[in-house]
Amino acid sequence: MARQRAAVIGAGLAGAAAARALSARGLDVVLFDKGRGPGGRMSTRRASTPLGDVSFDHGAQFLTATGESFSTLLTEAQTAGAADLWTGRTVSIDRGGNAESLRDKTRWVGVPGMNAIVKTALTGMDVRFGRRAVRVSGEDGAWIIHFEDGKTEGPFQKLALTIPPEQLIEFLARSDGEFSAMIAEALAAKLSPCWAVMTVPETAADPGFDGAKLLGGALRWMARMTSRPGQTGPESWVLHASPDWSEAFLESDPETVARALTEEAFIRFGLPLPVWSQAHRWRYALVTEAPGTPFALDPTGTLGCAGDWRLGPRAELAWESGDALGDALAD
View 1 (cartoon, helix red, strand yellow):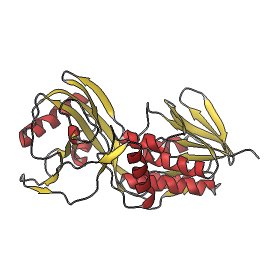
View 2: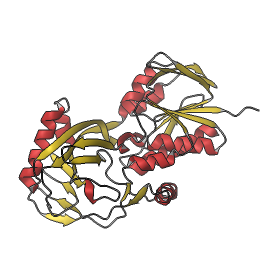
View 3: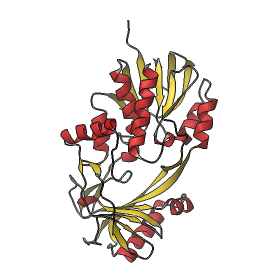
């Protein structure tokens, strides 16, 4: 008897977890992702600057693990040299500038970047990048994926969708099948945006921390990339704007955003102005309202969706969601 085929759309943590679960249950799995590499919001950006080559983790800043499955992945990645503990000085700074050390916790980062952890999770998998899926046709046991370039793949007996809810809604609305319940849940989910700025200051400076959670002003978080294991090159920082500021300036041009956030970091913390900076808009960054269940299936039980948007704003929840969906589809 031929092995069943499964497809996963999205090669972030949820997609990797779903693919691993399906593969472990004996299905042939292929992943498709519209990006150039794995990771989703755990992507790593590399750049050449006047002071040298640098890399930035401009999305997820660190990971924590409470459950066995995600802890196993992080240990696996550490063994492979793809993850390590970040022991940098982390603080919380209130509106008045008062700093307090953040409570001790084990913070994991990818080496040399966050996407190395996702790459570890996808080891041995058939992953195809640069493929933007736009809809699916067919029915139970014969799903055909249609791509933006007009090409198709399939049939697949099982299909896992691990894309943000706004993209999921558009995808399902164009597709064949009964997806009204899934669309309703995706419509109810809420994610806030985040502007991220990657910056290389003209000179090195020590504001007294390597990572800071910030209250008041435009900035919500800033971190010294060169304090993290595996990071080399000139002094470099990532700045994250608050959800409210990001929403208010969502359609601003990246140059304006980069200037505003680097100037605030200079005024508040003395971080020297940049010789190089670049802004990236995460339109769907932080889950604020979620259905509360790890996955959803269509009436046939052969197509489902997963992601952190179903459970909450932690990377581990994305992993647990994808893992649960993979198991459910394999049953």
